Amino acid sequence: MARKTKAAPAAEPPRRRRPRWLTALVVFAVCAAVAGGVAAYETVSDQAAERPVSSDEAARLALSRLNLYQASPVNVVLTADEGGGVRIQVEGVVDYRTHRGAGRYRSTGASGPLDHGLVVWDTGGLGLAPEPADDQSPPWQQAEHVPRSDWSPRSYTADPLDAGLQLLTQLGADRPDNPVLLAQSGARWLGQDRIDGRSYDRFSGPRAQGAAPDGNRSPLTYWVDGDGSLRRVTMRMAGLGTPATVEFSGRNADAKLPEAPWLTG
Image (tube, rainbow, N blue to C red; front, side):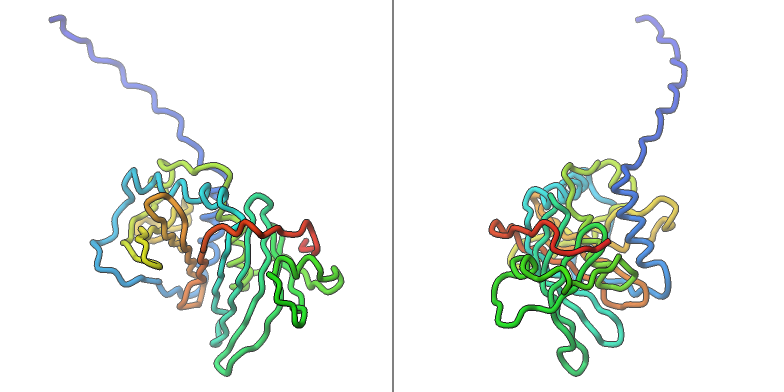
């Protein structure tokens, strides 16, 4: 057998560039959590210690945003603590094809209810309006009939409600993510939980390059089932011991979000 000659070292392949959506999402989440003391959010689990995601887990996590996009419009519930014992909850619908959402909000404090009304949001910001009296229709229908002059629009701020709604607009995508980049960017398997009788893997999301040292988790945690469907997302925020939580409860085929009854820019 002829002796093989030693091949010259191959040139190092060019580094694949991180997609813009991934950079934007993880930078947004890290920026929301870097200032002040942040209490880690843990789900009770008897699973093994956390570890890097496997190739199968990375593939399912990579599909989760596409599956959410394809299922939209989807029902959502956002819960966020405002500090000082004040909690705000939004129940509504998000359409990832139009990047719009509409719902009703309720804020409560230690002494009980504080405020309520309609909220609409898109990629530019959000708008609040009084909830019509004696109207039992879904909030996306109510929003269509509220006069534009009754809306109080604003751009997004660092307020926990704003941060949660802004995160909501970014969770769906019209294409799958790159599972290799997810794994390389620090996504980790944290355990398994059951929600409404179904098993979900719990993952910490990817980290922004240079924004968090090795060993620090992403502020985002995802609950993904065996089919790559997203059930829950939490986001830790600065100074708040309880993370903002987004719950998805499936497609709402009847929802038809209005074109533009508000101005959020």
